[in-house]
Length: 238
Image (cartoon, rainbow, N blue to C red; front, side, top):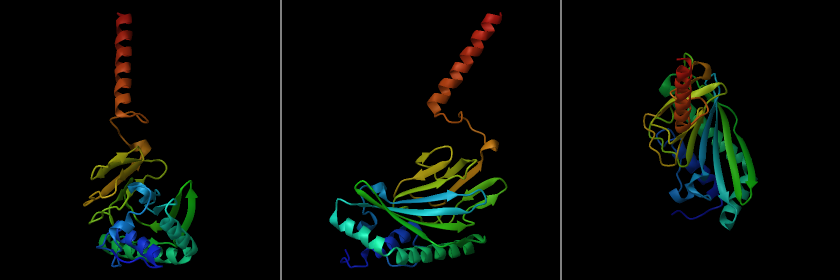
């Protein structure tokens, strides 16, 4: 393991970015795997993509620190004190990813200024880094499709989640999402996402085998009740 230095928090951010945004797209120093996993539980690192209906997105990297550990308290404070530098590093790396993704897909893309927030929740410190990414999703008719830069060698260091814009629902994903709702798809840390794709469609044009707002067992019960009611009504009419 590399010795700790005052720059360890910044290396940690870059390490997470390097893993989360795929080493094939970024050429940056990578700290130890232990530094990437720092937090109160394996799910404390997350990367969330919030889509807009025009294909733009807000991409947010969330890092959590266990404030009961002195080392992590110190790391959080150093991050808090160096928000400007951290934001600049995050923005630079995300723009590098966007440039390479635009070249790969042939679509125009750009990344705006990074925003950094530092907060505490009970005994957990939370750092969120986010950027507005123009043109992340492909617009195919009424479908929004997210693929690159997550389709080639991307292995999330924490939870990876893609969220539909308002008025849209999840249509399909590849590989199959570990957790999904009508409007979100998520995969746990360490998932292999080669060939990744997540597609969303307008809710008013979507078709589904289950009833909106119900899980599969509840939907089956509802269908059975409708059928029983129809049969009872038919017997009463005869």
